[in-house]
Image (cartoon, rainbow, N blue to C red):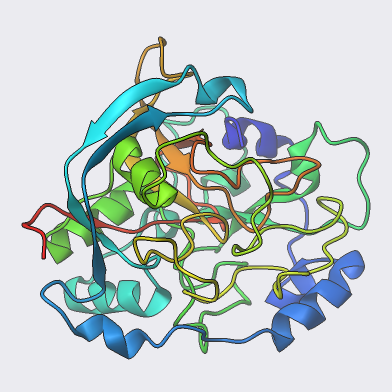
Length: 328
């Protein structure tokens, strides 16, 4: 999404359904049924408690040609080098973030009122605490207006990712979403870790492959099969978010680097790798999400990237942390 507050402001007054199943709309009832039938857990998270850095895997250092050429913001390719680091083997889950909140009393950005000084001109309902939520439409009029499937929902946050009537109860093993950049930095500091740089993230996602990245829609990832945003055939088993670790890990043992949820990195966003002023109000996000499809968002690749407003929480964006420590 590009500057989603400004785009979505025009449709902020749209009525919001209360429950997760209802929020997909009439055309998404089958999608809601499939989502309800999908597994609530895939990976045995009890193994995260073992090892010198529980829940993390070692990513050896290396050099590679960073970037891609599918969309303009991905290029030009440039040589990047990274030192070895530890990385969460899966996206941070609702249960893990809940432990942080319970220990610290932290209140996320989406649970606080929007600062009108930072976002002048917003309608009153968009000044309320909330997040941007994907709502599967019945049909669309062209694909240029993303407000046909994205809504700013007052009351949406990490506890209620689809709005006030939704809940993460029984979804403890799912990636936590609806977090702004300040929220994930606070979690990482609490863990004694940091947020990966764009280069670290892309190198880890490649799983040791330094050559030309794969452009095909991956089979071992949660992406969109069908015509986005109205038809999802769920060939991969999921129409929405999947629990952590439902697909095979890459060569480094990392799950869901591609698909499921976009992931924050620590880099301020530039329009491309060659030039452009770094915009600290936006951060680079990587990897695509369950909403990426061949007909619209081919960002299910390690070299894909987008800019995301640092203070805007969304329902398809999560994160994982890294740790600078000696290797095994």
